[in-house]
Length: 93
Image (tube, rainbow, N blue to C red; front, side, top):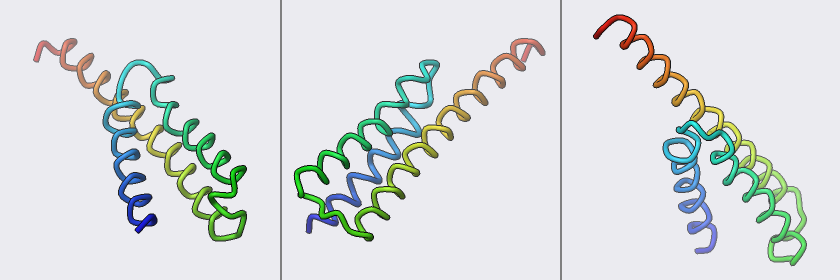
């Protein structure tokens, strides 16, 4: 059951990351979830709540990697929105 909560929480945080936190003019705001996930995973491993084995390390690396990928995608969405608004204002649309 804990795994289900982890997957649902992970998906929710990644969606929040891409469409809310990273999709704005403040690039540092999008860094909250990737850095927080690194701190959270290290904390779990230090407290032995998450055993230090190959499967857990692989899951941690995948989740942190996805956090940074979604951060980049959110920044790209913001950049596309800005470029589109500049283009429309230049063309008088």
